[in-house]
Image (tube, rainbow, N blue to C red; front, side, top):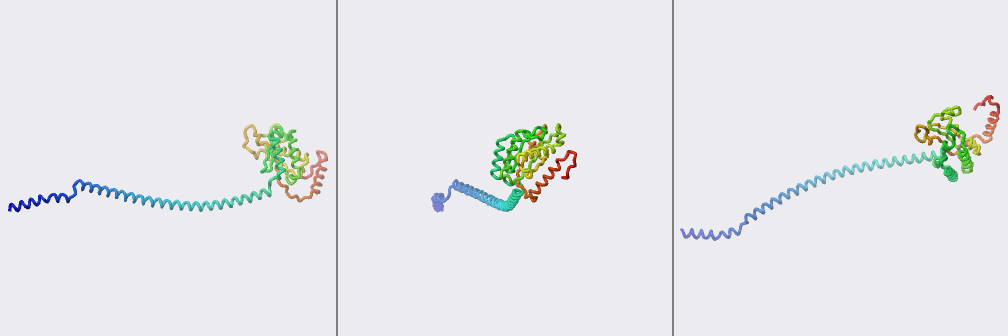
Length: 285
């Protein structure tokens, strides 16, 4: 029995090395467990990152769809605005054509160049606006303060204007002479010009009569005044030279229905009537 037990014990002891060589060392086993746990954690984080990225992608896609919808809406509104603008542009062009044909058309090149050259010769006295067909006289250089008598240099310039207006290229244009003042009240010449409106009209008449004296037909000339009521710039205390001016507009002549002979006869009759004494009865006009 003892011998059998000894043999058994020896056999067990002899087999221990083989059992030991078939097992994983504990430290390697622990390392494997740790690595496995780390990989699981990394996997969990990767899945979370994936889910977050998918959510962000869906949100971005939704935002993109919304933006595209806004872009489509804006594109539609832009097309509508463009159509409205095209319509307004067409209306504006049509209005310009109407104004050009009924009111102030462009001046003939020779008339425009002659007026521009004249204004360049007298830059302090004259300015010329080709777009409006308008010459502007500075009143402070054209008249004395509160007066409607042309200064000598202004008379010379008006005569030069008349020569241009008498040229064949300008014969088809009416001459509208418009007087303007600033808002300083009339003081020392109220007996002749009670208001600024009177002074503006009287100055326009003086320029008109100078044109007629230089040979421009009376039937082509219209004289008027706006006084202080159409300033170029806001009036300042003490006077505003920019607003004291006389403007001459050239506009296409209207078709006249009264024959020239009849018009001339009427003027002759009027002239004859005004040769009577000052206290005679004034004919109806």
